[in-house]
Length: 282
Ligand SMILES: NC(=O)c1ccc[n+]([C@@H]2O[C@H](COP(=O)([O-])OP(=O)(O)OC[C@H]3O[C@@H](n4cnc5c(N)ncnc54)[C@H](O)[C@@H]3O)[C@@H](O)[C@H]2O)c1
Image (cartoon, rainbow, N blue to C red; front, side):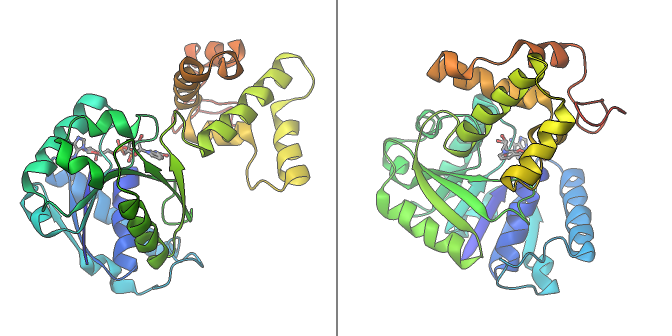
């Protein structure tokens, strides 16, 4: 089986890695060689650190990287059975990539999107009608080499046999898929942001500090990381963006808390270079 990945960023590079470690031949593409070089250096470091040797990976062979071929074109995708796009989170950029894939991929190739917020059925509109049965979402979680879950998202026109097929493929590389309907936020982000919104409200009301609420989630609920430390990693900006999309879709219950908006506007969104809730240093 041959697999393609478009976009060699944070997610795409590791998606390529988990398929390669699962024993598949992988083509990884990006717009320029520099992005591909950076991706390979990062994957080598991951393997060196042993980060990608999660218990769920069925095949820990160090030669996994040797199965990844990089390219700045899309021609090699003509031989792929599955192609996953992990380019920028933009309807325009993703739609253009999907149109290009439609032009090169075999009719039976399954095309998957790793979008975290765009509806699969909206993205499907970029493809001709006969392609949409084989188009679906595969929502991976960061870091992909460690997080076993994949939300497999069926769009309005996705053929259920293709969601079943991809779930089987994902199990084969050590992932644990769940098949869900195409709704805003999918399943995981709806649960996560319901909790994050309530956690920020608790801080707004002066009930507890972010540190104590993180402790509560870790020691009381068994979560590996608390909501505030998590926001510092993924950035409060991205959390706010996700909540705005879900507020639009579901109304009041996903209204972003005022404090979260204020902190984002104040440049306290966390990430690599800015202070966050728990990490005070930028
Ligand atoms: N970062 C996360 O935690 C996370 C989690 C789940 C899903 N996602 C989704 O995964 C996708 C990628 O996110 P990321 O964090 O890896 O982004 P990123 O910015 O790290 O990587 C995107 C890559 O796509 C490349 N790219 C952009 N346009 C392209 C094109 N036309 N052709 C080829 N390559 C192109 C860029 O050069 C870049 O290397 C997004 O849709 C995002 O919403 C991200």
